[in-house]
Image 1 (cartoon, one colour):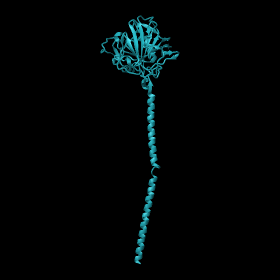
Image 2 (image 1 turned 120 degrees about the vertical axis):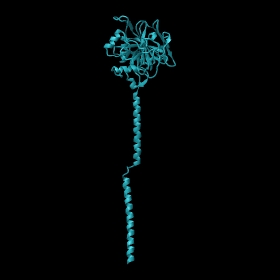
Image 3 (image 1 turned 120 degrees about the horizontal axis):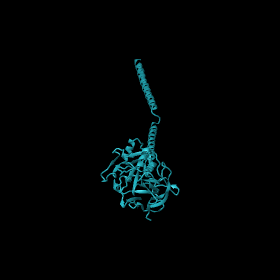
Image 4 (image 1 turned 180 degrees about the vertical axis):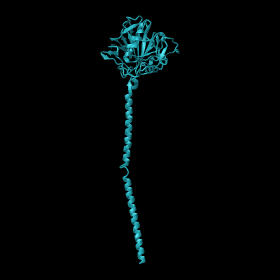
Length: 371
């Protein structure tokens, strides 16, 4: 009997152990099932989707940057050359440049977008250089203002740098709404006498585009504006006119300009009174892409002795010169605030990209195209 009980107990113990192992195994399987249910569904695919989304996001951001950069690109209003929107929104600076023989050579003129040449007293002319798409570390020599230069500068709502002026010009600047950058009242940090060239006063007043912009801000004017630009071809085009490889403009016997076409650069150099002109800063010759000759009327001032006045309102005729050729054009300036516009066969003239010189001449000015 005792042996039978021992066997029964042993069997019960074995059965208990078997049931325990089975229950533990089931519990482990349930726990594993629960643990797996807590994992993300299709976790590997979700991970790949996340990567793809991230990559797509990065591509979108990159594309956005590229679009932004594209939008920031522009063509300069007054030269037609590539620039940025930020640069293109800067206010131009118009600088009166002395053109007396004792004032040459000129500094910074190669960086000007446009240069205007008009007569002053005697047999002399003076330049007004428009700086916009490029800076000039040194520019000059700067000289005094005249009424008709102010009228031309006003077309661009530019800061106007000069050293004093005729009594008429001084009064206009004092009573009108102009950005008057006059060396007579400016600090020496804006414009200064520069003696290293060997020139003497009044032919040695210099400045820089940076110093003039700083002065403009100091006296409370905005550095930007939205003034209208000119029309430009995207690449240089011949005007399909007559040959103009050497263009001579003789204001007087002692005041002559000769523009020579340089095929290698597709630009014109300038020889003034028999001397080739170079920039004082780098000794490089001028590279003029467009030349406009605009015929107008100069006459002695009716009430102020010793100075000229210029009738450049209304309309008139002239010439456009580029790429070794010239064509006849017309011009129109409706009033003081309006831009002088140039036309070819009734359509507004498109300039070639690069520096433009506008020479305001008169009927007595001798012009020879060398043909």
